[in-house]
Image 1 (cartoon, rainbow, N blue to C red):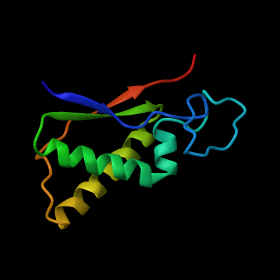
Image 2: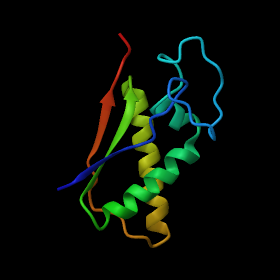
Image 3: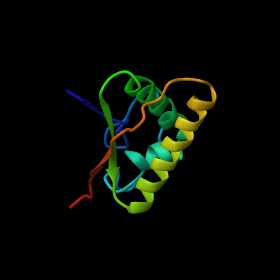
Image 4: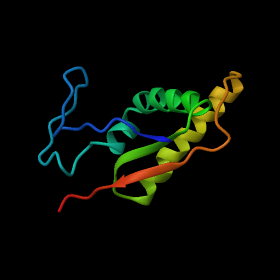
Length: 108
């Protein structure tokens, strides 16, 4: 059975002590989930390299969290494509296809 891996889903509402974040008036609307990953692309790139390397050998899917707009999804997919291209240039195996999903979340 395939495993669905959700990329890092943290923000001001779910802080990590080793990942500094700026204070926000409303952490539920702010920089979290995919927005945090896009602001700090090295976090997302590291995760996606691991996902692609693993998916070359095992059934794996990836999901981006807290996606609120089509543009956020497109940016995340572009990072994924760049990471894949880098791995392929380095001669690392990558999967022929990788299913990508999103967790669409907007605070009520």
